[in-house]
Length: 323
Length: 69
Image 1 (cartoon, rainbow over the protein chains, first blue to last red):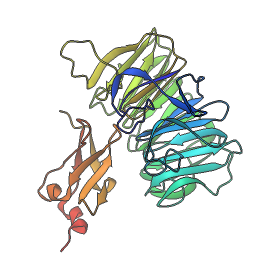
Image 2 (spheres, chains in turn blue, green):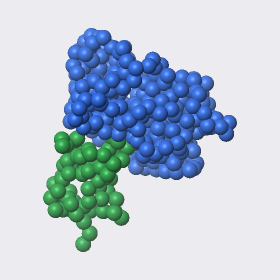
Image 3 (cartoon, chains in turn green, yellow):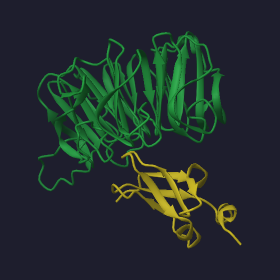
């Protein structure tokens, strides 16, 4: 079962309601004409501005939320209230503000939704139906953020969308997939995207390009991003750099945790149980039991869930967990 | 309340019908400020769905292309 809390004004939690929730509510799936909450552990959960996609290992992909521009991969309706299957067999996907990119089992790229800054890789356009990007690439990784996408194909990287903060090296909008010469691209172990920065993990260092430029040396275990901050596990400790207007930066030197995930401006840490931190105005950090807490800024780790989970995924003020 | 971020006006999208500038908010809605407010010297764009606010970075001459007559 998948549970979710947080911002839900466009049904992005997929529970049939458009009410925000600070408590975890089961996601609903429409399967064979029946609504069910019983699903296997997904491979990954992707988050747009107001839409959500769930990809399963068998290639099935479900979506819900705002479909005004077809960004859920469905022709209609405008709002998809429970997770509904997108026909096809998919191996990967990524979501941005009002668009989605789907990779099928032949490594072909399909896009849907809207983007005036090249987000679809097809120029300034809206595609209410899944449309193929005419490029032939092996897709090893694909990630999207608000207005752009970065794809890895072997040792090569391709970007499209709004890169005006310098995250594609050149400060430019790429209307179609364009090869970018990232520094020491062969040595990049993984990458993550803030709204305006590309963050590269070389294993023994981190370098970011764009609005938030950082350079860090050390043994890097993982990197994650919010829209305006970078978070990394270095030498076993959790560290953060960037915007701290709403408690987004984690408690430096935090150790003894299993993993962490980040959403637009909040994070979830897994240790003996799950804890949230950062901006939780929509219930995405749960509820603080501290007296006089504003339930908006969670500077301290807030216990949010005490049962075992197999997957955590965070979006725009949303938190999803898999039991 | 703290300002969440500072955003340059060129990163806002202008809606010529409503005469407002908008930019994505991390809650899923959009920060918005009217052209008239900017002309009056106001620079705080607010989100209708949450408490976050951003400061708009602009010069008065940046508004000229959006003003008619």
